[in-house]
Amino acid sequence: MTSTSLNNTVPASQSTPSYADIQSIVANDFEVMDKQVFGSLNSKVQLVMSVSQHVINAGGKRMRPLITLLCARMFDDNPSEKAMHLAAITEMLHTATLVHDDVIDESGQRRGKPTANATWDNATAVLVGDYLIARAFNLLVGFQSLPLLQVFSDGTCDIAEGEVLQLQHQHNPAATEEDYLRIIDGKTSRLFMMATQGAAILQDKTEYMTALGDFGQHFGNAFQIIDDVLDYSGDSEVMGKNLGDDLAEGKPTLPTIKALELLKDSDTEGYEQLRIAVQTGKTPNAEQLIELVRSSGSLAYCKQRALEETKLAQDALSTLPNNRYRTGLYQLTELASARLV
Image (cartoon, rainbow, N blue to C red; front, side):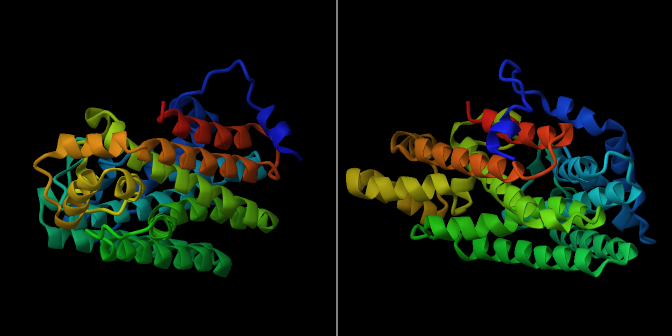
């Protein structure tokens, strides 16, 4: 099967569908999964339940579990209780990573809502994040599948390592694109890989593990690069955070890494301003620094890299069963790329 046949599953005249349109392909499964995210919480400690429900309610679009459901249906177009359950577990793990991220970043809001650490305190948020991870693995044991446990345990280790790598390179103006890719491979792309490969294991379609892993990795890479570009060019109200927040936090993102590389040869003064801002996290002249990144040519480079990763993700889909669920996965890549326009 060629990439051309993949592209033919999406009519050329059709505009990029909305997220709701893609979600509607597995609407019934999604509704059951969404309830299971809450229903799977069974702590005897009321504070754990309160905080867990708070952070899950503040959750986003449930993209990772949606991918699990699309993959499961792609292999077998019948309702799968196991797939819905696994999708809910995937969202539980994702929520745990967000809780820990908010503590590390000292975030007061996520998507316009108070974070757990701001509502309660850091200690409570960290421990509830730990509970969500522990509960996810407690539920995974129920599948009685060692391969599934292996994928999720390896992946969770990679996620933690990615977060530590990001912390290690925080406020490091010498961080490279290679460092950045290692970070996002762990902290972002790995969970997308787990979402796809887990469905293949459940449906006994392990011959597709490599293709699904490639899709998850490249889609995750593209997704994170796009997020990082939007930190310099997006709508702060839509994003739920201020432009330039990543810079103020000293995060080693591709836009600043590439901007420093380009400015070093073309604008010594601008390079020093940006280097010091990354190193210290002090950005009283945030608008000027954002404009430095924009004018350096960095964002154009990052957008191209995001599109390259998107194309690799789409190519990975070409060997998978050709049906509307694979089309849904393809459309998710298009929807993500459309955020760059």
